[in-house]
Amino acid sequence: MVTVLAHIIEMTIMTTGGFRDSCYFRAGHHPAPGLYPPIEPYNTQMVDVGDGQQLYVEQCGNPEGKPVVFLHGGPGGGGGTERRRFFNPDAYRIIILDQRGCGLSTPHIAQAHTPREMATNTTWKLVEDLEKIRELLGIERWEVFGGSWGSCLSLAYAETHPERVTELVLRGIFTMREQELDWYYNFGASEVFPELWNKFCEPLRRVGHDFSRDNIAAYYDLLWDDDPDVHGPAAVAWTTWEGATTSLSFDPSHIEEFSDPNFALAFARIENHYFVNHGFMVEGQLLRDAHKLADIPTVIVQGRYDMCCPDVTAVDLSRALPSADLRIVMAGHSAFEPLIASELVKVCDEFAER
Image 1 (cartoon, rainbow, N blue to C red):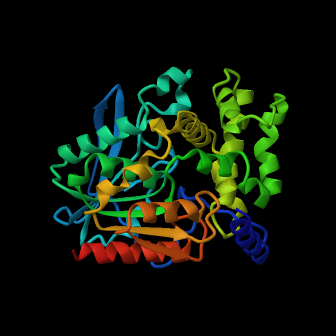
Image 2: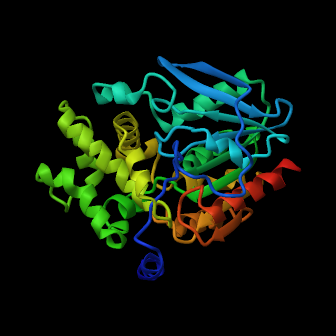
């Protein structure tokens, strides 16, 4: 831990004012160079996956191309338009979806009144959703691409249905272990960004939270408080902490994007719901079962100075899956940092030729 913090603090001093960006690209933010040009979907639809859930699904690129599914982060981040640009549109049939409760999928969790409305939003329901979408689209096997929470869901899906995955492209590895959650929400990243951490803690201080106890569980109560003057500011504090710490670049305007009330409330509630439930998995499950992926070509792209999902998890995954190609670049967490984006495009170009 000391060595990791030393590297991180060194990079903090070298940057101008701190870390700002997000693994969840939103309108108005500048994409990294090296991405493919913007494209529009050739098909969009709302897919009924059961449980009263309608998922937004779009297809871009070449309808006859190599199928790839993009799994967004959060959970709760939504798909967005720039995610289409990691893939050669002449070579790939690109499938992007908004997971349950967020983005353009309905019902939107920002409109929920009680946590009971989250009961069917679980990792394994999302895995089922992916299979329903794959079957609906008539795809036998597909490449799976996911970063941050998207890497977690990619692993869960691939370990459940390895026969349906041609390749895995994983970025900013997150496996929902307790140590990973503690680092970001209890103690660790707090030591690198003390001024930003102070803002994250403000809603907890207002209710007299005992900081020797879990901050994630305490936020759960705030995010589901009936009073909009309680759950609204709590959601914005939760999302802006993440938006402010996931990149080596500094962009004050990006924080405004994370302050959008509907986005913030859905994002914070969904993330927190998964975290308090440990991702609906046993501790270390995804690493334990990584051997099931041995026959799937896998590339891991990891930022050396990733504050959201530190390198240790990517290294642990590479040890559990020795066949994986671990590529560490000098960047933070965001998929849109130049070195990460260019490496992801390179990997997808390589896999497009398989």
